[in-house]
Length: 101
Image (cartoon, rainbow, N blue to C red; front, side):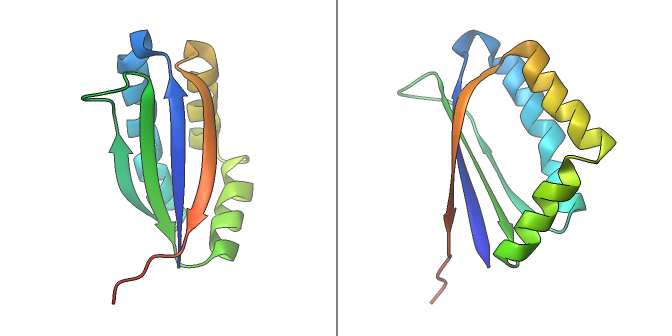
């Protein structure tokens, strides 16, 4: 199992647009066999940092999702929405192995 952690630097004046973008991706990750653990928008503290967490059964399945997402019409629309609105200034992606015991 692998959990992807995304840390976004967002335009704080485009929070509504980023939230729409986030809501586009939750069902898409699930569609490709992952489990979305949610987006986390700024509340207190920094007003330009948002997070997302989602899990796939393996890194290979995550990589398959990444490849397939570039060919999926709904994913392409989500990528384009972020590009058009410029709600995301930058992001970084890291991977973690969860421990439950």
